[in-house]
Amino acid sequence: MGQQAYAVRRPGRWTSSVILCGSVLMASAPVHAFKITEPAPGAKLAAGQTVTAHVDLGNDIGIVKVRYYWYREQDETLVQQDETDSGPSKSGAKISMDKFLQKDSVVGGSVVSLPVLVSTGDRDPAFGGPLKIPADAIGPMRLLAVADISRGRLGTRTVFDEIAVNTEPPAELQAIDFETDKPLLLGREGQSATYGQVDVLGKIFELPVVGDFADGVSRPLTAPTSGTSYHSSNDKVIQVLSDGMLKIVGNGKTVLTVKNRGKEASLDVHVAVGDEPNEPPVAVAGADRTVKSGTKVELNGLGSHDPEGEALFYTWSQVRGAKVPLLDLNMPKASFLAPSVSEPKLFRFRLRVTDKKGADSMPAFVDVTVEP
Image 1 (cartoon, rainbow, N blue to C red):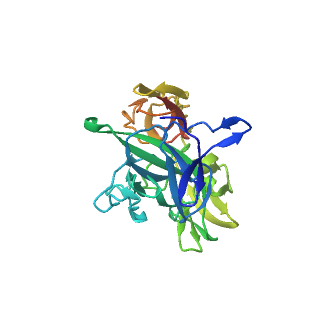
Image 2 (cartoon, one colour; image 1 turned 90 degrees about the horizontal axis):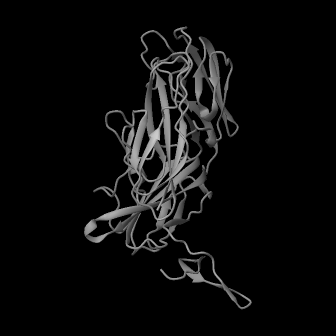
């Protein structure tokens, strides 16, 4: 493409402008790759608000469609499914929010992410349009835009851009609640697992906490980034870790208290697990790195270890970037093929390991930057 001037936002459209400074023509550097230009990275948005999405196509030629997806800060990046029969029309109408995530019918987990907006070049603005912030959003959210590029008989390829924004509910918090049994009994007779893991000393877990707001919407408050703080009345039974995680350190009783926006809630917890000493394993996801498109990338968790020297079970997942096919998710080493990109793009992966007794590690992360 030829030289570009910077783009200035005017009501209803984008126009190009230049600045004359004496006898020198000054223009900002051209954008060379597909980018989200609105909303701006770090923007403060209201849950349920509708904003207008804009993108700059840069030097990516042949874009035929752009799909937009919302994720929470640490959500696993799901397979980005295209339109469905019940989804957006070819004109790009946004999908209803109740179709935002498709749930697995067996375990109830999210397996497919459906676009909240699909837009084409004939929209105004081109490849953008009205974009609704999820009504239950609170705290950091990721907006992922995936552009489909036509390659004629070779089919299509995709490029993407991802930004983070901060969201706030438009209404006051009225009450906080724990979505669990009350009191919470950990390790009671006949209980095989809590939240998918056996209750043992050293187990690390989190409790689902929700807030009821004055606008009638319940929003998840588990993450500290939503404004929640945790306190345990007896840290010799349950210890509060970072990121809202909790650790079983002994038998007995404690009261867990959460606070958010001037409200609080408490939960009685009774722990009666085996007294065999056990410390949680430590996940090590390897060093961050930069690779070229087309490279086979290996994620190496062999540095993970257990204080008692027990064998480990591995779980890899992706939490940033457009979804890539990740092989060997439950092995010490996982791998993927670095996709085609127009400029350096970040892909982030999370590793958690579990020991034979059922204690989980804190999550570990590794960033892989893919270059053209």
